Amino acid sequence: MSKVMLASASTPGDVRSRQIVAIVCCLVAEFFLAADWYAFAAVMSFVSADLALTPGQAGLAQGVFGLSYCMGMLVWSPLVRRIDGRAAFSIGLLGTGIFMGAQALSTSFSELLVYRSVVGFFDAAVWIGAMRLIIGWFPEKRHGSAIGALLASYSLAITLDFAVGVPLAQAQGWRVFFYGLALGTVIVAIAGWLMLRDAPLGSNSISSEGARVSAQDVSSRSVFASKWLYVGAAAIFGATFALSATATWVVPAFVAVRQMPLERAAVIGSAMGLSQIVILLIGGLLADRIDRLVMLKVGAALAAASALVFMVVLTQAVPWGALIAVAIFSGVAVLSGGAIFSALSERFGKELAASAIGYAQIGGVLSSFVAPAAMGWIIERSGGSFLAAFGLFAGVELAVLAILLTLARDPAQLASKRLKSSF
Image (cartoon, rainbow, N blue to C red; front, side):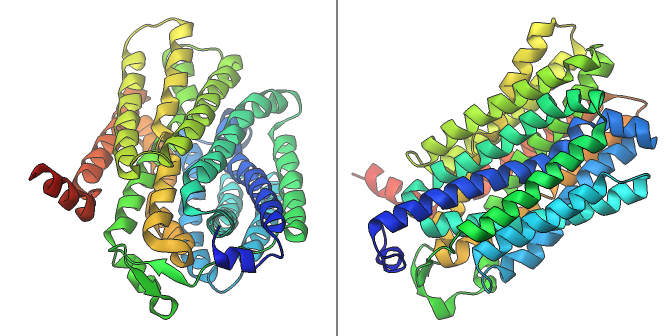
């Protein structure tokens, strides 16, 4: 535990209790962040029927959230260094909840697009605030497991979006589902404001070369000058592309190509989500124990493998059990989730880490717009070819793997290996 951290609380017990409050609040916040993000994907068939959306419009409605989320990162990443993490956290949740409720009132494609865009902007503040709280309250050696837990909560929300959202939409309508999420999000915003304390950040941070620099030398320019920002962005792009592609288009693909009854959508969505939860928890623990750059490359390779497996089941007649198995296997695409963010915090230090993570997500989370929108466009333009759409998915993941194999190499580690090999 750092001296700075202990100085900010009267006793180690106070620090421990604040860590518990921080991790619990962030876990719940991440749950609602993801639930609000992917609620539309879960009930897309119902919304599309109600609002007469084409596949291209449906993909754009899901994807525009990621685009506005990235725009939010441009605002909240530098701002979080001037306001505390608690404020960003609570403001983000409050805005998300209010406009999530407004989204339930949509009567046209244009209204849906506007409201989802605003929700995405505020959701960015939630993530940035949570990162500042976690990075500040927890030591670096626990960042992988802590962030892995947040991402697991994120996947749990997507799982329940399908498990709860689909039957609720069938019984009560998709608008009731959205109203419930809106209310829960606002409650968490108020609870976070009342319970949280901002994280105590140290006075030093780490430059792109790994050396300590003084606080007055810290700037956004130093973040953009580091190659690790772009390594992180590429890794996030690949992982988020896989998450968005599977959450949005696997169920429609199985329904259209494998003639899966729509009633089984909850089973497939739950299988994918539960798999991601387990894989993220395992990956977070591994990220605190083995080389994080290796984890990034392994994660990208597994994401590419997942995309290729989906292409196989779309071309071959397979039994229902095989579809469930493929859905479960798709969770491997997010193995490196905890490693990505902990690698960035390791290289940028506490003062810059939250901003660096935010900037990396601007490029990375752009894929949550590109994946559903581009795949939807391909399906619409090709006359319903899900195979072509998943071919794009595979191509993107292979490109990300190539980038990481080229860039994600630590010169200090390479020099050490060469020195050892010379003896």
